Length: 222
Image (tube, rainbow, N blue to C red; front, top):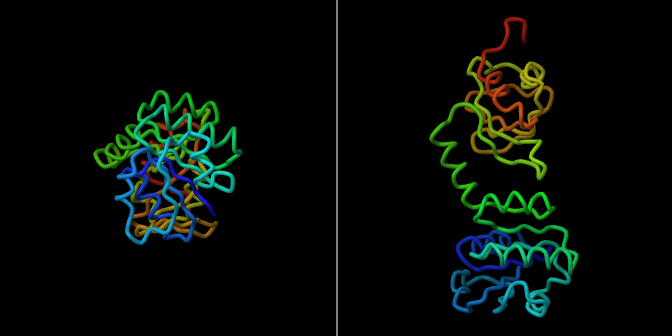
């Protein structure tokens, strides 16, 4: 598919490289032509110097045939404006904006503009490594009611079916990370040592779920 990226900083250039490695067509927009030096010499995509929310600039980058648009420049306002133009003017369905201000990111998410709040994400990643026990939020829906979180599991669950853990906690497990690889579980999946469990739950149940996952299984389980 064709993807347009606004911003050729560290994030934009890395994103362009990854997308091209996956055989997608990529166009990169940046105000400064010198920013394109961050792209690898093998980059085959389009380079467009200009303002990322300018209509002519976007058209030059192929926005009219784009399947996705990412606004990842260093400016919150520019990213939001560009994301809205891509979605509302050109009808691009898959749009995301990088936002430094976490409070503003939440507002825009509620308006239906998917955002990545850089500071909040970085803080969450650091926190997960400082406090490996318990629950670490990975995603929340725009309404804030549903959360996907990585949850520490009591070692006594090793060898039990994941389905039993779900039943005991009334939580849906979305996937596991096992030896660095994502796994979609089925009814026969068994918890193994080192598994990272990623579960979906109501936001207000976070602490309750963390406590339940941290407790050993009842004697009548499994």
